[in-house]
Image (cartoon, rainbow, N blue to C red; front, side, top):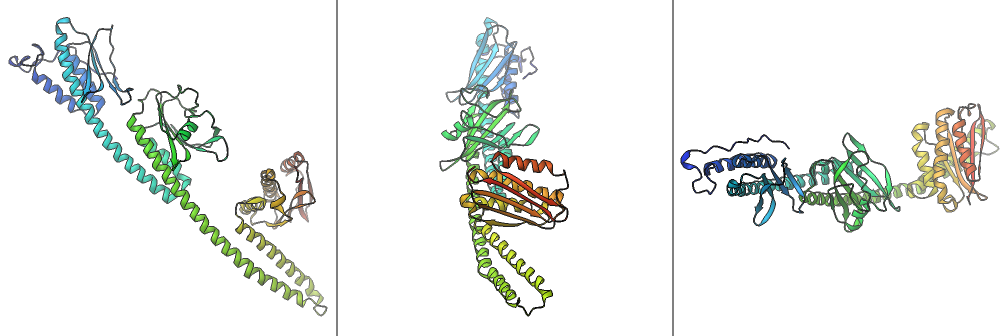
Length: 508
């Protein structure tokens, strides 16, 4: 930080006041010191106030250069007004407040006869600097406290209003503002795995980062989560034995690591960084960031509780609907079917028989669909059936209507967990191909187990495969079946639609 410095001593207020009772010699008056004191206190920032102290020290002593260094509570340099000293001859005075050393004020050595006068001036200016530092620290603490309260309140309200979808990014943005950071990453543990996932990454010129994963072993994130203690690093590159994972795209110097833990349960960590060359994080910023992280973790816990309550309420609604479908609707359809079957006798007009039989078949299909829906309502998110139903439902808009889904055999009991990802991929590919190429009005999906084999059958009433237009998708399905010891069969025509059968052994 460069500052204009006059190299001539300040003139006395008047000849009669020169050095009277100050012990400062014939060149500096008490009025001069009071004027300097007023100039320093009038500054609007601690940086400009210290620069004024250094400049005044040089003017009043005739020193060629000076500097001021302020230490944080941990002894690290918190603020520096640098000087350009030639040689090692310097005079200095500790900046002290109530027996606590806040920093040091230095000037280049003056002539031997002026050293006592220079020392007295330095002591006076060091005391002025101590007063200024305390005032600005108190003001900064008050402002930080107010900012923390506002930020914590805002995050809690946002969480309770919007849920988790956007909240992590809101937390990251507020924390970045709170501690004046350049980089903030929200890192959460991947459930059941020794991995960490970056849910949110805010870096300069990129507000939408996140999504990458990395092994948790030997990382700062895991160490923070395991200890539950916040950390402050002066240099991200000098952390023995730990990967910081905060400067993947930009060069970060100082780092804060803040745990997201509530009631002993680890949620993740917040990694906060400043670019190389910026000032280090203070202990006050560490404490404030840690308190904010604790508040954010508690708010996330509240959201999780609320979402669990919502899921319970939803499950109760689903159970009620499923009971109504089973006890009322299906019974009514059965009764309707039996009534129609009852009128199919030799006395009925032969021309009506196909119509009546078609209606009975439609009723059977409706009953099967309702049973599938009942299962989906009662078993949300569990088992192979749910994988199939979720995949089919996700492509309903693409297809133009929901496909008909039927199951046969003990699908959930016999289908290995290792097949679920393949089931999702195969069914998704098959239905996507139908949507893109078949021009179908109806799509039927049958999934089940029989004679030691798992089977997926997709039948549509479209225009067939269209030659080679779907070869890439079909090749993918064949390849996946072959890798599992199974096969894929295709029967297609322009008038009868397409039937795709994908089978693999259950012991794959």
